[in-house]
Length: 149
Image 1 (cartoon, rainbow, N blue to C red):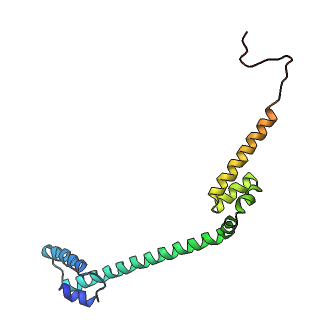
Image 2 (image 1 turned 30 degrees about the vertical axis):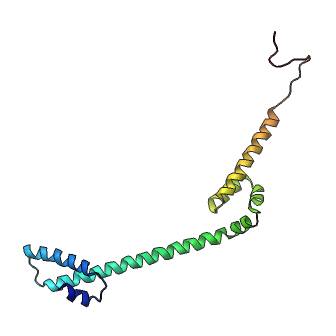
Image 3 (image 1 turned 60 degrees about the vertical axis):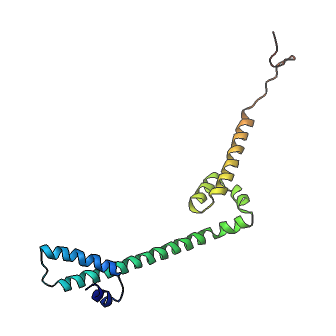
């Protein structure tokens, strides 16, 4: 019977699958007989073929979606990639405000350059604050550090 269904289904599912289904239905049939065992077996196997085809279609759709997302990524990052390849991206990013830089980082792939420019901006800000807050006080006399009294 396994060979019959394998031939009938044109090899769309394996003989092992047909054998497992046959054994399962045969086990059930021993306790609760089917009116038409061959019809039940045929319909079950046809559904199994449909399930397998659907799984393959889903895999193809998933691959198509992945390719579409990759194309979208390439499209929105084209300018970034061009500037990166021409070594102009970091100079361009240095001209942006922190807010613009953060927004661009969320929208396109500039994470490496973002870190560089963001760190540079932080150091500039820190140095700017330090230069504003450091005031020199001069006290008359000649004093040395760690002077002994």
